[in-house]
Length: 233
Image (tube, rainbow, N blue to C red; front, side, top):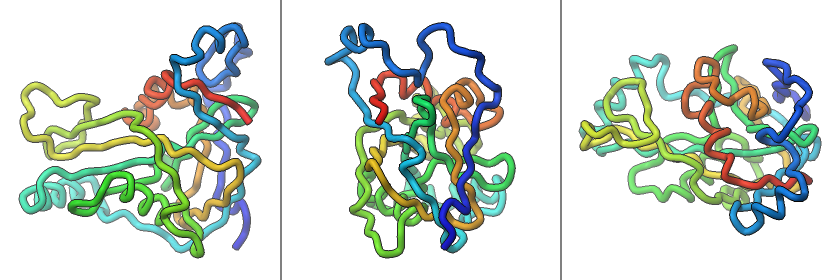
């Protein structure tokens, strides 16, 4: 197993200019920290260099096309009802700038680690299972993962691609509910990445308002995460 074989640092497109003031993911000035103390939840974020990366067997999507995905969604909705989907938001920092760990398939498809819950499965326990399947070590167990609070919620009102961060007024029975959870990382860890994926670290400034590159859910993460106070270690 080769360490770091399936990891890529997505550094800087567009390349940032030298910051002239506070920006998302920057170290919090001391006076600002005093003002926000007690109002924003603190999240510990450790350096990317603290983590090592290996590979494991390939992990394949259940559907081979978007059309096939929605055919399956329709069939399963008739049998089980609304699909529940959970994602983990794993954060690191590089040069004191917060990055989100994403799984990349091919050149243009990015996703958060996570997936579909089984019927009746608890959200927290289900996400631990999915994280273990996506990035866990063979000797580890799902319980080694810690899942914190919900970052954002998204709903799919129809058997179609659009997702919304609210339930549209005309939709009484959403077809899918997606939840993003903060997943606090230990100060050191090893991730085993499926060999058909890359694990990339994308800075918040690259994700922000970049639906074309990452889709609306991931592009919204900088806004959803702005309510937290990041502590860099």
